[in-house]
Image (tube, rainbow, N blue to C red):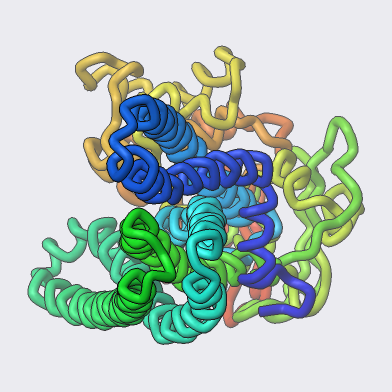
Length: 565
């Protein structure tokens, strides 16, 4: 975790601080509830001594009314406190999810590094819920401590030895409970890590289900998930055993403590130091103490698990950014002149390119890694190790990543569709510009896709567009990129799953719809390359040749091999 980033403790404190008012209100109501609960055996003891033993009907009626009022107050406070307490936990978890979403969606990137999407989902759901539960546990813990103090005071009024026994016995019990919760914290952290990894693997396998079936690799995938799931199950069982051991140990300690109070109270009654009514009250208070102690055991367990989850959340929030944010934005009316000067990153080696504003340029890279590194640089998902990329003369490193992506759109080959209507998918980057959407649908031949669907463009697509064929998905994704109408558009293999005739139509329309806009096609498609102004050939991470498509086909054997293979 980088120095200065949020820690697990800070995440916990912020979660509680954000719900401070609700926690305080719930704690006060909980204290009132527990106080009334503790007073019930005291009033019953007083009833025995002042009404039952004396036969006073008036005293009996008066004390029964007091009991009725106590039950009315405690039940009202309990319901209200429970509602506020649970609400504070849900709100705390909700705000943590918002913070996590903001970090994951931060245009500077970095939060998803070395993490599967399913793992991030698990952190944003399970871990956020557990940290939110700490806000709930705090209110319950305060109520439990208040109950113990009120019980101790009541016992002091009945008998000083009984009261001192409770007051002196509570701190060691709380300390022991905290010590016992340490193994639970460690095992809860391991449990959440394994569960998150299992979720990530499951999401990964589901997303590639068609590929796995096509390759006949279902058995290998099942074996992989079985191993991951078994690891998760083992961690969960270890945490469950630790939870059970923690609760059992605390319950045993509490039982012994309450038994000691009962024995001492009985001895004092037999000695005549306290009355029968006082003995009943003391025994009732001793039994009542079981509730607060169990509540404290629950609080300890929630805090242990909350600390483990807070640490995992803090690791995501403190993830180092991939690129630093600049303080400039592209000038209004961006021309779209892109320049690469000695760009080195991954497989790229000193790439120099001039991509004039309004040009349509094809880039051919036989090495998929080189193509990917180029896309990563242009999208500013990573900055070059050496060299620089400029937009209209301004280095990309000087630009705010979010503002940059409103001027430069990199549409990756594997772009996913959303679980929404076809038109909603296309409008994602276009807003309310209906004309732009219609042009994009026609240019990408996605309007033909809409005609084949039951409700046309209003047809709801399945998750990631799986209800469409591969070629249909590509056309809708291309329409979405075109509808955004960015000054600079980078397309990576947008028609690999499209039939030849449709690809030719798209190539012809693409030039028209992107007229006077800078467009970069990273592809080996002859149909698309044929409509470009110029083609740049990357070989071994460097620019090997430039020229028109027909010229390169005639003069460059490497180019022919890459394009016509």
